[in-house]
Image (tube, rainbow, N blue to C red; front, side, top):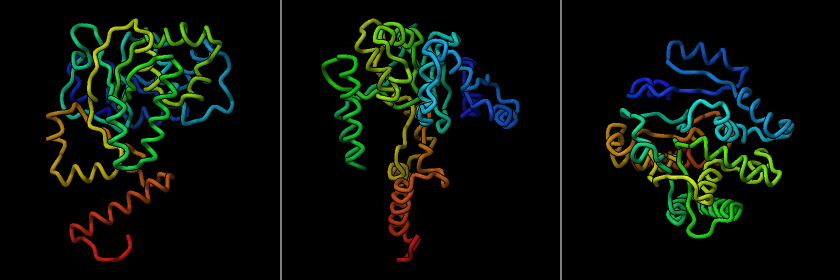
Length: 279
């Protein structure tokens, strides 16, 4: 990811990378001379604690990354920031204007929820049902009526002013902390998008995802069979995101790995690479 930013970053947009303090020296050593600014998760959380009080002792670790993304604005580094996960990388040159409509209207990645339902049902109906319930729940939280949308996939450009308003105009009057919000509604992308739409106070321009996303192993293999490559994807997308939850062999989510192996066996048989032996 960092190497792709170094290669394609036309406007020299600063790259900030947040890591646990215990791993800071390890990351600095591995990065060598790659241009970036390191932050620690603890530093971002420190400002969060000043606003909301002590950090919950039983706060789920899987929500930590979401919290860091939502609270980065408190460092006052910029008005708009593009957050990107480490399992994504750019495929072609990009500049600031690629993330804005006109001079200062940020692009908001959003899909009609009905399109996401159809897509998810193709691979796993349970995912579609879970996604639909989450979208409706967060929509009700902010009292917005009308068509349901899904506000992903990353990378996404967020505005510090929107997140500040989420804190001061929504959470504080309700006596709610960001910890409670994430614990009850664990989807940072959906929280940001729904609040922005519900408030009606901010300019934005809807857009399709900047990157090609491979949520499932099945998608990746299907794309390969159709002849897709980084070269072809770069014509239509700025980058690619291959979710690490099914590419990491050490991943503990056995259901995903079992599904990946089963699909791989099927593809190998179709290509004549294996007989009837087990994988």
